Image (cartoon, rainbow, N blue to C red; front, side):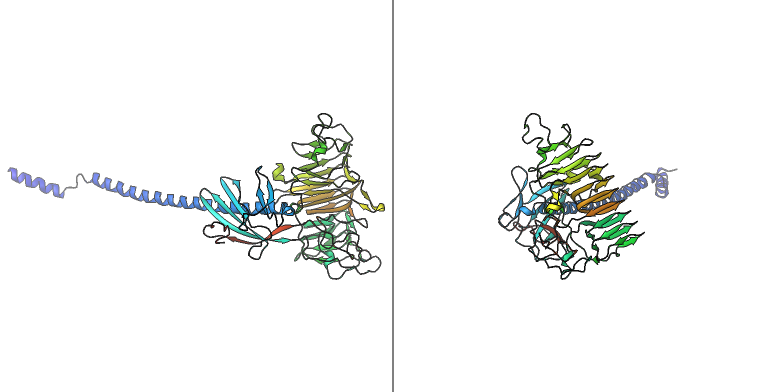
Length: 517
Protein backbone atom coordinates (compact mmCIF):
# COMPACT_ATOMS: atom_id res chain seq x y z
CA UNK A 1 0.00 0.00 0.00
CA UNK A 2 1.23 3.39 -0.78
CA UNK A 3 2.52 5.44 2.10
CA UNK A 4 0.00 8.21 1.49
CA UNK A 5 -2.87 5.76 1.56
CA UNK A 6 -1.64 4.23 4.81
CA UNK A 7 -1.41 7.69 6.39
CA UNK A 8 -4.93 8.58 5.36
CA UNK A 9 -6.23 5.31 6.73
CA UNK A 10 -4.52 5.85 10.10
CA UNK A 11 -5.82 9.40 10.36
CA UNK A 12 -9.30 8.15 9.58
CA UNK A 13 -9.00 5.53 12.34
CA UNK A 14 -7.83 8.16 14.83
CA UNK A 15 -10.82 10.36 14.06
CA UNK A 16 -13.35 7.60 14.73
CA UNK A 17 -11.53 5.72 17.53
CA UNK A 18 -12.36 6.30 21.29
CA UNK A 19 -9.04 5.04 22.56
CA UNK A 20 -7.33 7.38 25.18
CA UNK A 21 -10.55 9.17 26.31
CA UNK A 22 -10.62 7.58 29.77
CA UNK A 23 -7.85 9.74 31.18
CA UNK A 24 -9.25 13.19 30.27
CA UNK A 25 -12.75 12.13 31.26
CA UNK A 26 -11.47 10.92 34.65
CA UNK A 27 -9.56 14.16 35.16
CA UNK A 28 -12.60 16.27 34.32
CA UNK A 29 -14.77 14.19 36.70
CA UNK A 30 -12.21 14.61 39.49
CA UNK A 31 -12.11 18.37 39.01
CA UNK A 32 -15.92 18.56 39.09
CA UNK A 33 -16.08 16.43 42.26
CA UNK A 34 -13.49 18.58 43.98
CA UNK A 35 -15.49 21.66 43.06
CA UNK A 36 -18.70 20.24 44.56
CA UNK A 37 -16.92 19.05 47.70
CA UNK A 38 -15.28 22.43 48.13
CA UNK A 39 -18.62 24.16 47.91
CA UNK A 40 -20.01 21.84 50.60
CA UNK A 41 -17.00 22.47 52.85
CA UNK A 42 -17.31 26.23 52.42
CA UNK A 43 -21.03 26.04 53.20
CA UNK A 44 -20.37 23.88 56.27
CA UNK A 45 -17.72 26.29 57.54
CA UNK A 46 -20.13 29.19 57.12
CA UNK A 47 -22.81 27.30 59.07
CA UNK A 48 -20.36 26.40 61.83
CA UNK A 49 -19.18 29.97 62.07
CA UNK A 50 -22.79 31.16 62.29
CA UNK A 51 -23.60 28.57 64.96
CA UNK A 52 -20.50 29.52 66.95
CA UNK A 53 -21.39 33.20 66.75
CA UNK A 54 -24.97 32.45 67.77
CA UNK A 55 -23.65 30.49 70.76
CA UNK A 56 -21.34 33.37 71.68
CA UNK A 57 -24.23 35.80 71.34
CA UNK A 58 -26.32 33.75 73.75
CA UNK A 59 -23.40 33.50 76.16
CA UNK A 60 -22.92 37.27 75.94
CA UNK A 61 -26.57 38.07 76.73
CA UNK A 62 -26.44 35.57 79.62
CA UNK A 63 -23.33 37.33 80.94
CA UNK A 64 -25.11 40.70 80.68
CA UNK A 65 -28.07 39.28 82.62
CA UNK A 66 -25.66 37.96 85.25
CA UNK A 67 -24.07 41.41 85.55
CA UNK A 68 -27.46 43.05 86.08
CA UNK A 69 -28.36 40.45 88.73
CA UNK A 70 -25.05 40.96 90.53
CA UNK A 71 -25.66 44.71 90.50
CA UNK A 72 -29.11 44.25 92.00
CA UNK A 73 -27.81 41.90 94.72
CA UNK A 74 -25.11 44.37 95.70
CA UNK A 75 -27.42 47.38 95.61
CA UNK A 76 -29.91 45.63 97.89
CA UNK A 77 -27.22 44.40 100.22
CA UNK A 78 -25.60 47.82 100.64
CA UNK A 79 -28.74 49.94 100.15
CA UNK A 80 -28.70 51.25 103.71
CA UNK A 81 -25.29 52.86 103.12
CA UNK A 82 -26.30 54.80 100.00
CA UNK A 83 -27.24 58.46 100.31
CA UNK A 84 -27.37 61.67 98.29
CA UNK A 85 -23.72 62.29 99.18
CA UNK A 86 -22.68 58.71 98.35
CA UNK A 87 -25.19 57.40 95.81
CA UNK A 88 -22.95 54.73 94.22
CA UNK A 89 -21.27 51.47 95.09
CA UNK A 90 -17.65 51.77 94.03
CA UNK A 91 -14.69 49.40 94.31
CA UNK A 92 -12.00 50.81 96.61
CA UNK A 93 -8.26 50.21 96.42
CA UNK A 94 -8.60 47.11 98.56
CA UNK A 95 -11.05 45.63 96.06
CA UNK A 96 -14.02 46.03 98.43
CA UNK A 97 -17.36 47.68 97.69
CA UNK A 98 -18.12 50.94 99.46
CA UNK A 99 -20.57 53.78 99.07
CA UNK A 100 -19.15 56.75 97.19
CA UNK A 101 -19.81 59.54 94.69
CA UNK A 102 -20.86 59.20 91.06
CA UNK A 103 -18.58 60.05 88.15
CA UNK A 104 -20.31 63.39 87.64
CA UNK A 105 -22.52 62.35 84.72
CA UNK A 106 -25.16 60.76 86.96
CA UNK A 107 -23.64 57.30 86.56
CA UNK A 108 -21.49 55.23 88.86
CA UNK A 109 -18.12 53.86 87.86
CA UNK A 110 -18.22 50.63 85.84
CA UNK A 111 -17.63 47.37 87.67
CA UNK A 112 -16.40 44.24 85.91
CA UNK A 113 -16.72 40.54 86.61
CA UNK A 114 -16.67 37.12 84.97
CA UNK A 115 -19.14 34.26 84.84
CA UNK A 116 -16.94 31.37 83.71
CA UNK A 117 -16.49 29.78 80.30
CA UNK A 118 -14.60 32.82 79.09
CA UNK A 119 -17.66 35.10 79.33
CA UNK A 120 -17.42 38.40 81.23
CA UNK A 121 -19.60 41.36 82.14
CA UNK A 122 -19.35 44.97 83.15
CA UNK A 123 -22.14 47.12 84.52
CA UNK A 124 -22.87 50.71 85.42
CA UNK A 125 -25.64 51.83 87.72
CA UNK A 126 -27.20 55.24 87.73
CA UNK A 127 -26.73 57.20 90.96
CA UNK A 128 -29.41 56.29 93.49
CA UNK A 129 -31.84 59.17 93.84
CA UNK A 130 -31.21 60.74 90.42
CA UNK A 131 -34.00 58.78 88.76
CA UNK A 132 -33.92 57.03 85.41
CA UNK A 133 -36.76 57.30 82.91
CA UNK A 134 -39.40 57.45 85.61
CA UNK A 135 -37.75 54.75 87.73
CA UNK A 136 -35.57 54.94 90.82
CA UNK A 137 -32.40 53.76 89.10
CA UNK A 138 -31.11 51.88 86.05
CA UNK A 139 -28.38 49.33 85.52
CA UNK A 140 -26.76 48.97 82.10
CA UNK A 141 -24.86 45.70 81.78
CA UNK A 142 -22.66 44.56 78.91
CA UNK A 143 -21.80 40.90 78.40
CA UNK A 144 -19.02 39.60 76.17
CA UNK A 145 -18.08 36.13 74.94
CA UNK A 146 -15.34 35.40 72.38
CA UNK A 147 -15.51 38.90 70.89
CA UNK A 148 -19.33 39.09 70.77
CA UNK A 149 -21.01 41.71 72.99
CA UNK A 150 -24.62 42.27 74.04
CA UNK A 151 -25.94 45.12 76.19
CA UNK A 152 -29.09 45.38 78.31
CA UNK A 153 -30.73 47.92 80.60
CA UNK A 154 -32.80 47.03 83.65
CA UNK A 155 -34.84 49.69 85.46
CA UNK A 156 -35.54 49.31 89.18
CA UNK A 157 -38.02 50.81 91.61
CA UNK A 158 -37.68 50.90 95.37
CA UNK A 159 -40.31 48.98 97.32
CA UNK A 160 -41.23 48.38 100.93
CA UNK A 161 -42.20 45.12 102.62
CA UNK A 162 -45.98 45.44 102.22
CA UNK A 163 -48.16 45.51 99.15
CA UNK A 164 -49.49 48.92 100.10
CA UNK A 165 -47.95 51.84 101.94
CA UNK A 166 -49.32 52.49 105.39
CA UNK A 167 -48.22 55.94 106.45
CA UNK A 168 -49.92 56.02 109.83
CA UNK A 169 -51.03 53.33 112.26
CA UNK A 170 -54.78 53.05 112.37
CA UNK A 171 -56.59 52.88 115.65
CA UNK A 172 -58.22 49.46 116.04
CA UNK A 173 -61.88 49.43 116.92
CA UNK A 174 -62.88 47.41 119.91
CA UNK A 175 -64.08 43.98 118.83
CA UNK A 176 -66.42 41.66 120.61
CA UNK A 177 -64.92 39.61 123.39
CA UNK A 178 -62.90 36.70 121.98
CA UNK A 179 -62.69 38.22 118.48
CA UNK A 180 -59.92 40.13 116.80
CA UNK A 181 -60.67 43.84 116.52
CA UNK A 182 -60.77 45.34 113.05
CA UNK A 183 -59.10 48.63 112.20
CA UNK A 184 -60.17 50.88 109.36
CA UNK A 185 -59.57 49.35 105.95
CA UNK A 186 -57.33 46.34 105.45
CA UNK A 187 -53.95 47.88 106.25
CA UNK A 188 -53.81 46.13 109.61
CA UNK A 189 -53.00 42.91 107.80
CA UNK A 190 -50.25 44.24 105.53
CA UNK A 191 -46.68 43.09 105.95
CA UNK A 192 -44.94 40.04 107.37
CA UNK A 193 -46.98 37.62 109.44
CA UNK A 194 -45.59 35.67 112.37
CA UNK A 195 -45.70 32.50 110.24
CA UNK A 196 -44.93 33.25 106.60
CA UNK A 197 -44.09 30.98 103.69
CA UNK A 198 -43.47 32.86 100.45
CA UNK A 199 -44.61 29.93 98.27
CA UNK A 200 -46.77 27.91 100.68
CA UNK A 201 -47.51 27.03 104.32
CA UNK A 202 -48.52 23.56 105.50
CA UNK A 203 -49.54 22.62 109.06
CA UNK A 204 -50.12 18.97 109.89
CA UNK A 205 -50.55 16.54 112.77
CA UNK A 206 -51.54 18.76 115.71
CA UNK A 207 -49.42 21.75 114.64
CA UNK A 208 -50.88 25.10 115.63
CA UNK A 209 -50.52 28.86 115.85
CA UNK A 210 -51.84 30.93 118.75
CA UNK A 211 -52.39 34.67 118.21
CA UNK A 212 -50.08 34.33 115.20
CA UNK A 213 -51.22 35.19 111.68
CA UNK A 214 -50.28 33.03 108.68
CA UNK A 215 -49.31 34.50 105.32
CA UNK A 216 -48.26 33.28 101.88
CA UNK A 217 -48.41 34.31 98.25
CA UNK A 218 -49.31 30.70 97.50
CA UNK A 219 -51.49 28.16 99.29
CA UNK A 220 -52.23 27.19 102.89
CA UNK A 221 -53.01 23.62 103.96
CA UNK A 222 -54.09 22.66 107.49
CA UNK A 223 -54.56 18.95 108.12
CA UNK A 224 -54.74 16.20 110.77
CA UNK A 225 -55.99 18.07 113.86
CA UNK A 226 -53.90 21.17 113.15
CA UNK A 227 -55.35 24.56 114.10
CA UNK A 228 -54.79 28.21 113.27
CA UNK A 229 -55.66 30.89 115.80
CA UNK A 230 -54.86 33.88 113.64
CA UNK A 231 -55.77 35.49 110.32
CA UNK A 232 -54.78 33.65 107.14
CA UNK A 233 -53.53 35.46 104.03
CA UNK A 234 -53.31 33.43 100.85
CA UNK A 235 -52.03 34.32 97.38
CA UNK A 236 -54.00 36.21 94.75
CA UNK A 237 -55.65 33.74 92.39
CA UNK A 238 -54.80 30.79 94.66
CA UNK A 239 -57.36 28.41 96.21
CA UNK A 240 -58.71 29.30 99.62
CA UNK A 241 -57.01 27.66 102.62
CA UNK A 242 -57.58 23.92 102.73
CA UNK A 243 -58.73 22.32 106.01
CA UNK A 244 -59.05 18.56 106.40
CA UNK A 245 -59.23 15.80 109.04
CA UNK A 246 -60.50 17.74 112.07
CA UNK A 247 -58.40 20.84 111.38
CA UNK A 248 -59.81 24.31 111.93
CA UNK A 249 -59.33 28.06 112.11
CA UNK A 250 -60.30 29.52 115.45
CA UNK A 251 -63.40 31.71 115.63
CA UNK A 252 -62.96 35.45 115.22
CA UNK A 253 -60.23 35.27 112.56
CA UNK A 254 -60.49 35.82 108.84
CA UNK A 255 -59.16 34.54 105.53
CA UNK A 256 -58.22 37.09 102.88
CA UNK A 257 -56.55 37.11 99.48
CA UNK A 258 -53.47 39.30 98.99
CA UNK A 259 -49.85 39.13 97.87
CA UNK A 260 -47.10 40.71 99.96
CA UNK A 261 -43.49 41.45 99.04
CA UNK A 262 -41.21 39.73 101.55
CA UNK A 263 -37.97 41.73 101.80
CA UNK A 264 -34.75 39.79 101.19
CA UNK A 265 -32.15 39.64 103.93
CA UNK A 266 -29.81 41.51 101.57
CA UNK A 267 -31.97 44.60 102.02
CA UNK A 268 -31.01 45.07 105.68
CA UNK A 269 -27.86 43.05 106.36
CA UNK A 270 -25.07 45.39 107.55
CA UNK A 271 -22.87 46.42 104.65
CA UNK A 272 -19.64 45.59 106.50
CA UNK A 273 -20.84 42.35 108.11
CA UNK A 274 -18.01 40.34 106.52
CA UNK A 275 -15.34 42.33 108.35
CA UNK A 276 -17.17 43.82 111.33
CA UNK A 277 -18.90 41.03 113.27
CA UNK A 278 -18.85 39.18 116.59
CA UNK A 279 -17.32 35.92 115.32
CA UNK A 280 -14.10 36.65 117.23
CA UNK A 281 -15.97 36.04 120.49
CA UNK A 282 -16.18 32.32 119.62
CA UNK A 283 -12.50 31.82 118.76
CA UNK A 284 -10.39 29.56 121.02
CA UNK A 285 -7.67 31.52 122.77
CA UNK A 286 -4.08 30.60 121.96
CA UNK A 287 -3.07 32.41 125.15
CA UNK A 288 -4.70 35.00 127.37
CA UNK A 289 -6.73 37.33 125.12
CA UNK A 290 -4.87 36.14 122.01
CA UNK A 291 -6.34 36.75 119.56
CA UNK A 292 -8.10 39.80 120.96
CA UNK A 293 -11.59 39.12 122.26
CA UNK A 294 -11.26 35.34 122.03
CA UNK A 295 -13.57 33.17 124.17
CA UNK A 296 -15.62 36.23 125.12
CA UNK A 297 -18.86 34.26 124.76
CA UNK A 298 -19.53 31.60 127.39
CA UNK A 299 -19.14 27.90 126.53
CA UNK A 300 -19.73 25.26 129.20
CA UNK A 301 -17.46 22.63 127.69
CA UNK A 302 -13.80 22.59 126.71
CA UNK A 303 -12.93 25.01 123.92
CA UNK A 304 -11.45 23.41 120.83
CA UNK A 305 -10.05 24.72 117.57
CA UNK A 306 -13.27 23.83 115.74
CA UNK A 307 -15.87 23.90 118.54
CA UNK A 308 -17.87 25.98 119.25
CA UNK A 309 -16.49 27.85 116.23
CA UNK A 310 -14.94 26.39 113.10
CA UNK A 311 -13.38 29.34 111.30
CA UNK A 312 -12.68 27.31 108.16
CA UNK A 313 -16.27 26.25 107.53
CA UNK A 314 -17.69 29.22 109.51
CA UNK A 315 -19.88 26.88 111.57
CA UNK A 316 -21.24 27.26 115.10
CA UNK A 317 -21.69 23.94 116.91
CA UNK A 318 -21.39 22.51 120.42
CA UNK A 319 -20.60 19.26 122.23
CA UNK A 320 -23.38 17.10 123.65
CA UNK A 321 -25.24 18.58 126.63
CA UNK A 322 -23.31 21.86 126.35
CA UNK A 323 -24.61 25.40 126.66
CA UNK A 324 -23.35 28.27 124.55
CA UNK A 325 -24.21 31.86 125.49
CA UNK A 326 -23.86 34.49 122.79
CA UNK A 327 -23.53 38.03 124.11
CA UNK A 328 -22.31 39.84 121.03
CA UNK A 329 -24.23 41.64 118.31
CA UNK A 330 -24.12 40.47 114.69
CA UNK A 331 -22.46 37.18 113.75
CA UNK A 332 -21.74 36.14 110.16
CA UNK A 333 -21.69 32.37 109.56
CA UNK A 334 -22.34 29.65 107.02
CA UNK A 335 -24.01 27.10 109.30
CA UNK A 336 -25.34 26.52 112.84
CA UNK A 337 -25.58 22.85 113.87
CA UNK A 338 -26.92 21.98 117.34
CA UNK A 339 -28.04 18.61 118.68
CA UNK A 340 -28.16 16.31 121.70
CA UNK A 341 -29.49 18.59 124.45
CA UNK A 342 -27.40 21.61 123.49
CA UNK A 343 -28.82 24.98 124.54
CA UNK A 344 -27.92 28.16 122.67
CA UNK A 345 -28.68 31.20 124.82
CA UNK A 346 -28.84 34.89 124.03
CA UNK A 347 -27.14 36.58 126.96
CA UNK A 348 -28.66 39.26 129.15
CA UNK A 349 -28.75 42.76 127.62
CA UNK A 350 -27.54 41.38 124.26
CA UNK A 351 -29.30 41.62 120.92
CA UNK A 352 -27.91 38.77 118.88
CA UNK A 353 -28.44 38.52 115.14
CA UNK A 354 -26.86 35.64 113.23
CA UNK A 355 -26.60 36.29 109.51
CA UNK A 356 -26.00 33.30 107.22
CA UNK A 357 -23.94 33.88 104.08
CA UNK A 358 -25.08 32.57 100.68
CA UNK A 359 -24.43 28.88 99.84
CA UNK A 360 -22.29 30.06 96.92
CA UNK A 361 -19.94 31.96 99.23
CA UNK A 362 -19.94 29.07 101.72
CA UNK A 363 -19.28 26.37 99.13
CA UNK A 364 -22.44 24.48 100.09
CA UNK A 365 -24.34 22.08 97.86
CA UNK A 366 -28.02 22.11 97.04
CA UNK A 367 -30.28 21.13 99.93
CA UNK A 368 -27.73 21.83 102.68
CA UNK A 369 -29.23 22.53 106.11
CA UNK A 370 -27.68 25.85 107.04
CA UNK A 371 -29.61 25.88 110.32
CA UNK A 372 -29.91 22.35 111.71
CA UNK A 373 -31.38 21.92 115.22
CA UNK A 374 -32.23 18.44 116.49
CA UNK A 375 -32.47 15.99 119.36
CA UNK A 376 -33.70 18.31 122.10
CA UNK A 377 -31.39 21.19 121.28
CA UNK A 378 -33.06 24.55 121.77
CA UNK A 379 -32.56 28.31 121.58
CA UNK A 380 -33.60 30.62 124.40
CA UNK A 381 -33.15 34.23 125.46
CA UNK A 382 -32.49 35.62 128.94
CA UNK A 383 -34.00 38.85 127.64
CA UNK A 384 -37.39 37.25 126.95
CA UNK A 385 -39.34 37.95 130.14
CA UNK A 386 -42.96 38.72 129.18
CA UNK A 387 -44.03 39.22 132.79
CA UNK A 388 -41.52 42.07 132.97
CA UNK A 389 -42.36 43.46 129.55
CA UNK A 390 -39.12 42.21 127.95
CA UNK A 391 -39.36 40.49 124.56
CA UNK A 392 -35.81 40.36 123.17
CA UNK A 393 -35.08 37.23 121.12
CA UNK A 394 -32.16 36.30 118.83
CA UNK A 395 -32.68 36.49 115.08
CA UNK A 396 -31.43 34.00 112.49
CA UNK A 397 -31.33 35.61 109.04
CA UNK A 398 -30.44 33.50 105.99
CA UNK A 399 -29.46 35.21 102.74
CA UNK A 400 -30.23 32.06 100.75
CA UNK A 401 -29.88 31.78 96.99
CA UNK A 402 -31.96 31.95 93.83
CA UNK A 403 -30.10 29.00 92.28
CA UNK A 404 -28.95 26.74 95.17
CA UNK A 405 -31.64 25.33 97.45
CA UNK A 406 -31.01 25.72 101.19
CA UNK A 407 -32.91 24.43 104.19
CA UNK A 408 -33.73 25.10 107.84
CA UNK A 409 -34.69 22.04 109.86
CA UNK A 410 -35.82 21.85 113.47
CA UNK A 411 -36.60 18.32 114.61
CA UNK A 412 -37.11 16.06 117.63
CA UNK A 413 -37.36 18.79 120.23
CA UNK A 414 -39.51 18.98 123.31
CA UNK A 415 -38.52 22.36 124.69
CA UNK A 416 -39.48 25.98 124.21
CA UNK A 417 -37.58 28.16 121.74
CA UNK A 418 -37.47 31.95 121.76
CA UNK A 419 -36.20 32.97 118.35
CA UNK A 420 -36.91 34.59 115.00
CA UNK A 421 -36.12 32.50 111.92
CA UNK A 422 -36.09 34.64 108.78
CA UNK A 423 -35.19 32.69 105.63
CA UNK A 424 -37.33 33.89 102.69
CA UNK A 425 -35.20 31.95 100.17
CA UNK A 426 -34.91 28.71 102.17
CA UNK A 427 -37.31 25.87 102.93
CA UNK A 428 -38.20 25.65 106.63
CA UNK A 429 -39.21 22.33 108.19
CA UNK A 430 -40.13 22.12 111.90
CA UNK A 431 -41.28 18.80 113.28
CA UNK A 432 -41.76 16.73 116.42
CA UNK A 433 -42.66 18.60 119.56
CA UNK A 434 -41.34 22.13 119.68
CA UNK A 435 -42.87 25.43 120.80
CA UNK A 436 -41.73 28.75 119.36
CA UNK A 437 -42.21 32.23 120.77
CA UNK A 438 -41.22 34.56 117.95
CA UNK A 439 -41.65 34.31 114.20
CA UNK A 440 -40.86 31.92 111.34
CA UNK A 441 -40.46 33.10 107.75
CA UNK A 442 -39.34 30.84 104.91
CA UNK A 443 -39.68 30.22 101.20
CA UNK A 444 -41.87 27.31 102.20
CA UNK A 445 -42.90 26.41 105.77
CA UNK A 446 -43.92 22.95 106.93
CA UNK A 447 -44.97 22.40 110.58
CA UNK A 448 -45.63 18.82 111.61
CA UNK A 449 -46.42 16.83 114.74
CA UNK A 450 -47.12 19.00 117.77
CA UNK A 451 -45.21 22.08 116.67
CA UNK A 452 -46.66 25.33 118.04
CA UNK A 453 -45.93 28.96 117.16
CA UNK A 454 -47.14 31.53 119.69
CA UNK A 455 -47.05 35.22 120.55
CA UNK A 456 -47.02 36.73 124.00
CA UNK A 457 -48.96 39.97 124.28
CA UNK A 458 -46.57 42.86 123.74
CA UNK A 459 -44.18 41.03 121.41
CA UNK A 460 -43.31 42.97 118.24
CA UNK A 461 -41.34 41.97 115.19
CA UNK A 462 -37.94 43.68 114.86
CA UNK A 463 -37.96 46.80 112.68
CA UNK A 464 -36.04 45.18 109.80
CA UNK A 465 -38.97 42.87 109.09
CA UNK A 466 -41.84 44.68 110.82
CA UNK A 467 -44.94 45.46 108.74
CA UNK A 468 -45.31 49.10 107.71
CA UNK A 469 -47.22 51.05 110.31
CA UNK A 470 -46.63 48.61 113.16
CA UNK A 471 -46.35 50.59 116.35
CA UNK A 472 -44.26 50.20 119.39
CA UNK A 473 -46.48 50.16 122.44
CA UNK A 474 -49.71 50.84 120.53
CA UNK A 475 -52.78 48.71 121.10
CA UNK A 476 -55.47 47.65 118.68
CA UNK A 477 -58.93 46.40 119.35
CA UNK A 478 -59.35 43.62 121.83
CA UNK A 479 -57.71 40.46 120.55
CA UNK A 480 -55.82 42.28 117.74
CA UNK A 481 -52.16 43.02 118.55
CA UNK A 482 -50.09 45.64 116.83
CA UNK A 483 -52.81 47.75 115.24
CA UNK A 484 -53.18 50.59 117.68
CA UNK A 485 -52.75 54.31 117.52
CA UNK A 486 -49.24 55.67 117.53
CA UNK A 487 -46.29 56.55 115.37
CA UNK A 488 -45.10 53.85 112.97
CA UNK A 489 -41.74 52.36 113.84
CA UNK A 490 -38.89 53.29 111.54
CA UNK A 491 -37.71 50.52 109.25
CA UNK A 492 -34.29 49.98 107.77
CA UNK A 493 -35.83 48.20 104.78
CA UNK A 494 -34.72 49.40 101.38
CA UNK A 495 -34.53 47.21 98.33
CA UNK A 496 -34.96 47.46 94.58
CA UNK A 497 -37.25 45.41 92.37
CA UNK A 498 -36.79 45.16 88.55
CA UNK A 499 -39.60 46.85 86.62
CA UNK A 500 -38.39 47.07 83.00
CA UNK A 501 -35.91 45.17 80.82
CA UNK A 502 -34.71 46.17 77.36
CA UNK A 503 -31.87 45.11 75.09
CA UNK A 504 -29.81 47.98 73.77
CA UNK A 505 -28.97 48.36 70.09
CA UNK A 506 -25.77 49.93 68.82
CA UNK A 507 -22.84 51.03 70.92
CA UNK A 508 -22.79 52.97 74.17
CA UNK A 509 -21.59 56.54 73.88
CA UNK A 510 -18.99 58.16 76.06
CA UNK A 511 -20.65 59.36 79.24
CA UNK A 512 -23.98 57.83 78.19
CA UNK A 513 -24.04 54.15 79.18
CA UNK A 514 -27.77 53.95 78.35
CA UNK A 515 -27.44 55.29 74.80
CA UNK A 516 -29.50 53.30 72.25
CA UNK A 517 -31.37 51.49 75.03
